[in-house]
Image (cartoon, rainbow, N blue to C red):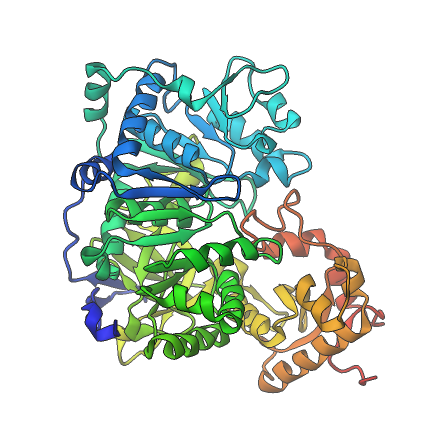
Length: 615
């Protein structure tokens, strides 16, 4: 189906721009946000009546065939589990903590909690599995005081994690544990009563559905209050951004974790509100995990495909080489959607080329800007805005303010999808909003075209990452980082820009170990330390940095020296989130000796210097 057949207008979020005194600008969408239900679970009830046999969620059983759960089956199971939850001492003061990844059981328990008006918190498994000291898990448990902890794969219940859970806290899971009694999901079920129906009807738009943890890239996680109003209003905003959702229930094949807002609110909300089907993908955009994703996409053709930029990069490589995969992937695809970072233009172009090859037309690539605290989406793009870096325009029902901060414009928002605040963290809540009640996203944006605002806003970096050089010039870290990653592709995973108050810019480079291994034709998987010491890799990166330097003579964009990280960024030390997002400040703080070496008068041999003569 061609773009013009999707009934996209050039700008579904027609926006009025109002300059104000002091340099700020208000962006007011002129469209009306459609009515939305009081509860997310109203959509489950609706579709169970309209399309009872339609599959809501499916997942492979032990890597084999798909287990399908229909809307009717889900509603019946959710109500029985909710009846059991209602008999327990659970509330916003004693919520349910789910510490395992995406699964049918996870979805049942979370929906049942919403039905009974009991908040739940999906905690990333990385907090208990990829952490050495469980510092973030300990913090979350102490702050939330959960009355129930659940996991539907036993590795998430490490013995160390269990020591953090109070002995009187009920454990729910699918396998026995040493020294702890475990309640199965089936054992939670109870007969549905009129009391449960009354309890459910007493929930409303302001009822807390869940607590979502921010990525913790600036310290310990913040616990974001998420209400029915937030997720339901944002789902309607999504529907406006994708008009094909009205005509055809979405089919989604997705791995994105429900512990984060992109997977747990954006995608689950989109599927449920539009009567769609979600195939849980147990793959990941990693060398080890991508095979499972490819297997699933060979069997299930999505109508809209969501991923992070790294995922699209890996998918594009497989689509190029696999005709069967390409045919299934594009068979009924209406749009792609990415979030979490900027998508490299070369990946975008490759997907356009393959879409033209398979369908004789390009598939719209959509994106936006948002945060856990905003439900998540604040802005959306349209096909007409299709280019890397553009984040679109505000959704109907929201009011956006662009406020001048450090020579940039920070995007701020008032919207029904914005959180009321952070749980048990009043000071953080107060700091998150400005004096007009706008939530501060911390992201900078600018107009793509000053003469044509309808072309949308462009992401301009994180305000908190920018710094000044010793000459007083501001360094815009976000755009520079994105350019460097593109310039150094495919050998790097991320780049950290150094450093405040210095005379010139340098960089710490996180290598893409798999890509470096391919370049070196290694038969084994090398360590970060091995890659950091490899003369061939350093030579390749030096050449790429020289190309970038020739195009960027300004001191605020010119990288003079660089160093490969000899060890991966640490979750425990706050250098990286479980999503893989880099905390620039934490890396600079923890790797201060490497930074010092970059500015030493006598250059060390492991430092990449663009002025060093080629070997």
